[in-house]
Image 1 (cartoon, rainbow, N blue to C red):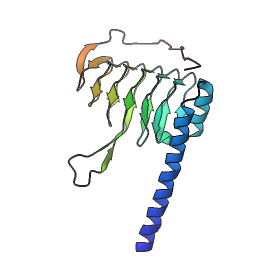
Image 2: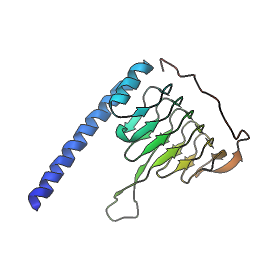
Image 3: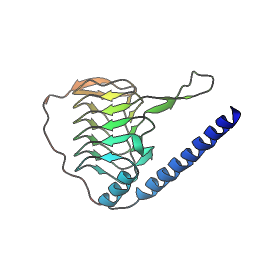
Length: 189
C-alpha cells in the first residue's frame, strides 16, 4: 500500500514538473513579437484557439490544456488565463490588457488551505475591461460587459454591464443581437 502511494507521489511530482516546464516555455514564447508564432506554440501546448483569434504578448497560462478560445477573440497583453480547471472563452470576445481569469483558488476557511476549482465561462460577445479579475466558477453571459478594474465574484447575466469591487450591475447593453466581428488582431503585439 505504501509503495503504491509513493509511486503515485513520484508520478504526480513528475507530471507537475513537466507542466511547469511547458508553462515556462509559454512564458518565454510570450515575448515573441509575432502573433502567428506565439499562437503556434500555444496550440502545441494544448490551448484550443479558434480561427482569427489573437493572444497578445506576455500572456500567462496556468495549465494550457484546459483552455478553449473561440473564433475572432482578442486577448490583450499581460492577461492571466488559468487552465487548472475548464476555461472557455467564446467567439468575438474582447479581453483587454492585464485581465485575470481564474478558475482555482484556496479555501481560506479550511484547515489545510486546499485548492478549490470551478470552471470559468466567458460567452460570446463579452467585453472585459482592463485589469478586471474574474474569479473561479463565474459565467459571463452573452454580450456582458465588465468594467475596468472590476472584481467579478458571481455570474453576470447576458448583456449586463458590471463594475466595481465586488462587481455589481451598473447598466445594460442595448444591442441584444450582436453580430459584429472584431477582426483587428495586431500581428506584432
